[in-house]
Length: 135
Image (cartoon, rainbow, N blue to C red; front, side, top):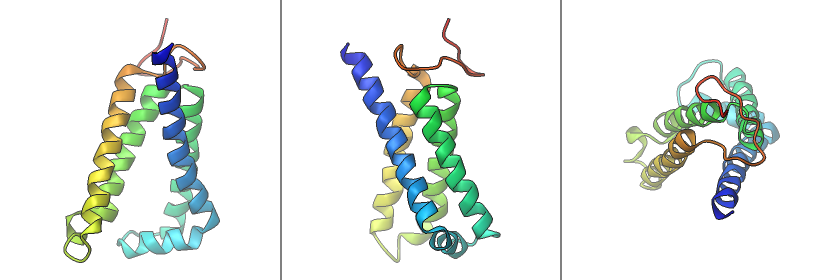
């Protein structure tokens, strides 16, 4: 029972983190686009919208458990991309807090990789996916 509760809480935490990120993007899409542009990416408004919808898809994957391993792996790649793109070494000299933000992404990565390997649990999960399927 404890394992099931821990897995469900972890899934809710993952979902909540990405839901908050998506909500902030939707609430301030132009601000998000400005942040993306400041990092040097082209078509920032398009990328902001894509990021917001991608985060909504991640939320759905974590909440339903469908394609859970794929969801966790995609989220892991996304989190590391964000770490380097927005908090990478080029930003540490100007603001030491950026190093902390950068390292925090690796903690998140560890949890996502652990989740990808161990799955969505036996309860409240649609066990479908390309990489791993529960019998």
